[in-house]
Length: 378
Image (cartoon, rainbow, N blue to C red; front, side, top):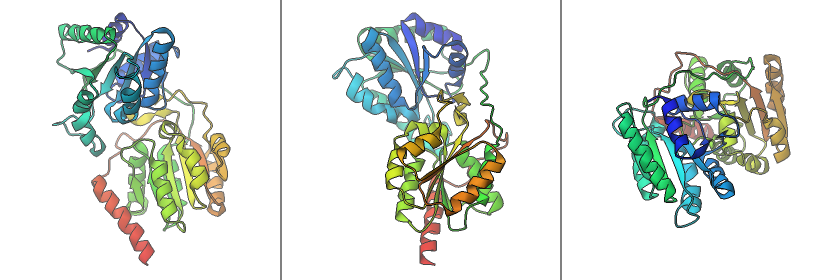
């Protein structure tokens, strides 16, 4: 189904705002919104719960109806405001959801999506949100019936969800975002790994950063045992790293984060600033985009993470935009007590042949923990 048809039908039932977090399944819609909607009508929030709350605010302020979009993995972030804010037993606020369906039962997907896919529809049932599925076979007549049902639910102060399967949407024109930066992310990751010591450990965030770190480590070290690849739970790699760092105070721990992930739970930086010890190094690779789900901008492009970290209370902060500065900073932080934050501005893009980890998530965990235990015993 063409995205223009979807957006037109949504507007016809009185929706004026499109709010959410980009998703690969919904990329054709995100492309259209980025191309045709203003920042007054299309808002990318830092996480899905914030999108629900913002939509609730628009309704409270002027009875404006909103369409909130997300990948089904983001339903966890949205669960609290759905259940404790907009549900009909609380504030009774109508809302339309568009949910990208990853990990659909019977369809092969990445490990972090499998369980989430199994519980997506039962979770909507539990939340008392009526829903419909949209796929490649959905006819125009069926789509009209879906929108009629959605309209009825919204008029009754209820929520309605359209769960969208992969390949259901198409757009006449894609949207391309360029941040103007020049450092190659994978090369930056290689430089980072080459500047760590053999007993240092590295926690990498979800998405392409983990995939690139895996391949770089396999290439230059021969294994990835000292890397913990955070394949899911977007935005939480820094807190995983904090736990590892606090339980291993004599070992340097690096967190290689992304800007979209860091924004999603930015309050974690406050906890790190006050709880992390001298061994914590936080690297944020900032390309101003959610690249792993299609390269859509975060709409927080001017965010200075190094400045924010300094305000939170990190001991040392750095901002890097070129290769010479990167090498200088990596040399300096070897002797700096943390917590340290280094923001590296990187270009969008990755190798067309970028692979994925060959081992399971559990195998990665077990190899990492064996490495930790073995180093402690040696």
